[in-house]
Amino acid sequence: MSKVRYKLPEHDKGGVIEDDVWIGSNAIILHGVTIKRGSVIGAGSVVTKSTEPYSISVGNPARILRYRFSKEQILMHEEILYPADERLTSEQIDTFIT
Image 1: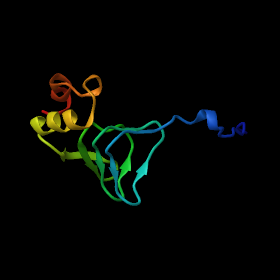
Image 2: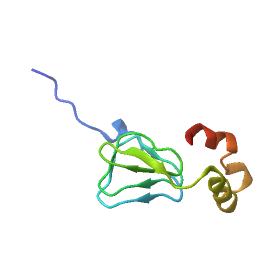
Image 3: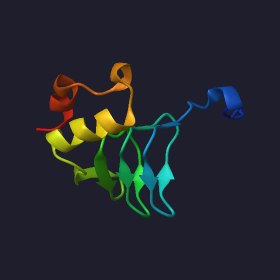
Image 4: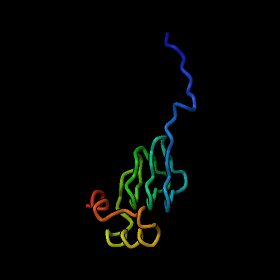
């Protein structure tokens, strides 16, 4: 016989949804996942792991379909929306856009 265990609030990992994110209807985002800035999650998608900034993720499990903007457009977007100390750098963008 197994021991009964109860799920307590402290067992949950918090999820994070950053700025400028769009989430389609009926999307499911699991605990511990971070939806990074500028991301889009397709309707009905099941997000099992954290997204990359400015990505479009769809499906079950959600996968990156493409990115919303080119590297140059992301840099312009960052300059408009964020103070200098919070912007993504060109090097950071290179790590997720191939």
